[in-house]
Image (tube, rainbow, N blue to C red; front, side, top):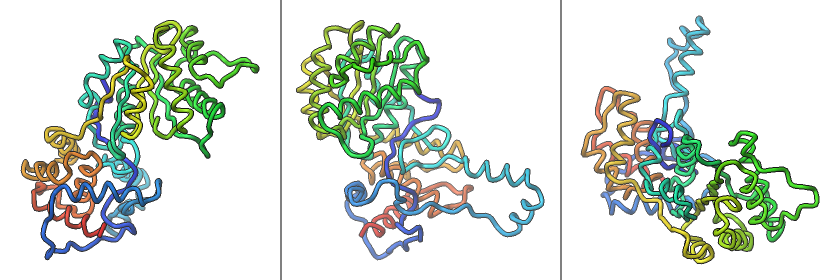
Length: 359
C-alpha cells in the first residue's frame, strides 16, 4: 500500500559518529554495558541538538587520484559515476525517509489496522516518541490510501511557520497549511473551494465541513505534528472535529488521523470522544530489522549475518532511529569490504564508537 521499497523511520540527525565528521577511535578497554543504554543515550541526546544540523557530519565521496584523472577525460563517464554514487540508498538518520534515497520498511507493515479504521470512518490518534518515524509512516499511509481513488486524501503538517499563533490566528494558519497541501496533492475538482473574503476562518470545523460538502469524494485528513500546535488551537480543532463527527460523510471529513507525540495522546482522545481510536506506532520487530538490513544486501550484495541482525535489534531495542544509526555507522564509518559479511563484531564495535561519541 506504500511505496515499493520498505520503510523505516528516521528522524533529525546525520550519519557517522562524531559531531565534526572526524572518526572517534573505539575504546577497546570499555566493557559493553546494558544494550538499552545506547538507545537511551542517543535518543535523549537529541533534545540538545539543533534540527537541521548534522549529527556526525556527512561522509565525503571518495575516489582515488587515477580514477579522478580518467573521469576528467570523459565527462559523460564521470557524470554517470557521480550519479550512481549519489543515488545509492543509505540508512537514513536525518528527516523523513524517501524511497529512492533510503532503505525503508513498507508503511503497510506498521500499524496494519489503520487503513481499515479509515475505511470505517474512524478518527485515529497515532502517537510515538520522537525519532520514531511518524512522518515517514504517515507519508506511506497517504500514498496507500490515495492509490485506490476512493477518498480525497490530504496529508498536512501542523508545524507552525515562524512563531506559533494562538486563537483565531492559529486556526487560520492551520487551515492555510491544509489548503496548501491540498493544492499540491489533489486534482482541482477535489480541492477546497476558495473562501469568500468575508468568511470567518476562525472555526476550522466549519471550513472543513464546507469542503466536505463540495468534495465529490469522502475527505480523509492526515495531520502530522499535532503536538506542535499551540494548546488552544489544538483543543479547539479537536473539539470541533468531535462536534461535526456525526455529520460525516457529506458535511464533515470522513476520517482524520492525528499524528503526534505521546504527550498529547491522552488529551486528544478525551477531546475527540468515544468515536476515536488511539494507537502507538510500534518499535521495529526483530523481523523488521532483518528486512531493513536485507535492503542493504539487495543494494550492495553485502549480507548481514543473523547474529549481527540480532545484535542490532537487541542494542537498539527496536527504536527505528537507533537501528539506522548503528547500521549506518557500520557501513559508512567502519566500512567493511562489500565482499565480507557484516558480523556481530562489527555491530559491537559500532555501538562502542557511538557510545564514545556521546560521552
